[in-house]
Structure formats: C-alpha cells, structure tokens
Length: 241
Image (cartoon, rainbow, N blue to C red; front, side, top):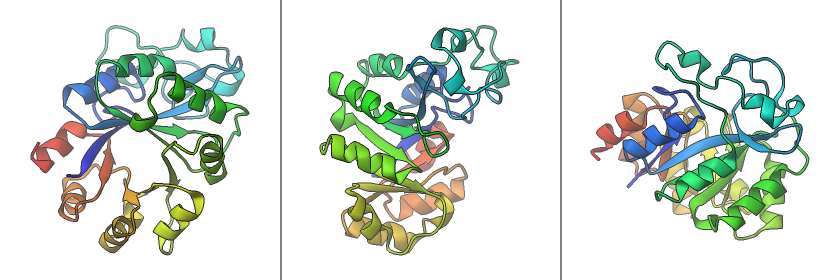
C-alpha cells in the first residue's frame, strides 16, 4: 500500500509546519508527516520551511539571525489568521518528537541547508533522533546531498533520501551511491517507469507534492512507496482508506 505523508503537516488546510497541521495529519490517519528544520541564532532546532519568517509569520528576518525566544513571539499561523482566533507558535523539533510519543507516525525531516549551511544541524538532529529512539520512525532528506551523506556517515543506521526537482538518469543508482534507501523526486519527474524501476532495485520512491486526484491515482496505481501531499485527507479518500 502506498503510504501518505502530510506535507508540512496538512499544509493545504492548516498553517504549515505548526502543531495544528501535524495534529490534523494524525486526525485524518496519515501514515507520516513531513517537516522542515533550521537552526536559530542560539542553536535551537526549529520547524519552519523558509530561510526567513516573512511569508508564514507576522515577523521579518532570517531564522539564522533570530534568537529562539524572539521567534516564539511570532504568529506562525499568520497566513491563516482569518480562520484562527489564537496564536500558533513556531514549534521545535523536540516538541514534535514529544508529541510523536502518542502516535506511530513516521517523520520525514527535511534539512533546510541547501541555501544556508547551518553548522551543526546534522549532529543536533541525529542526536535528537537517537535520544528518542526514533531511527525506525524517521527519514532525513535534503536538497543538499552532501548533508545527507554526512548524516549517513555519522550514523549508518539512519534512513536518508535525496530530494531533487530535475530528472535523473537511473536515480536508483544515484541513491545507492549516496547510501540512501529512497528518493524524493518532484512528482513531475517521477514517471511510472522511474517509480517502478527504482522500487524493483530496492529504492523507495516518495514524490512531492502530490495534490491533484489524478496525480494521486497514478502513483497509487503503480504501487508507489509513498506520496507527500498537502491534502492527506483527500489522498486517504482517493486511496480508499
């Protein structure tokens, strides 16, 4: 069965990368969540997609230039402000991991270090995974393939997956060269043949961001390992449960 990962939580219906979005993913019975992590100026691992807080909050500036206590004052549900009467905070990875004790969701952690190379991000994330004994419940992905290789070298038991948006020739061979167990391609470059041949060669395929029903049906039909979607409830209905 194709698994369903909620992209930044249920980002199509709830404020992305907030606990509310992750709770919604759990409520609709998604198989996993996808989230993004970066480091604050004082070294806290926080869950946010953009390198700046401008788009998703009522603040401005780079995450790397902000202290954690200041980020916590921002409204992380700012773009959904008409729907919500209370403020949602930017969560930490630790808060998400604490919540995961209550469920069996898999967590795909995207290291947001392809533009800003956060020193120590890999080590902090790996240390937290090991502290919570979540090796079997986590996947580390990034567009920075050097970073995920570094993660694998630091802890060979980790599951890693390269993110990519342009076509790759025989991507399963590339994944194996990195020591990766999976590939996370843009759904536009994940043809049926790529999906099938990758899985035949022992590499899982989890395309992003699969939001249209026609796209979902195509990946379900070929038995794709998983899809990453902003609309997990819709995907579950299309899958048939």
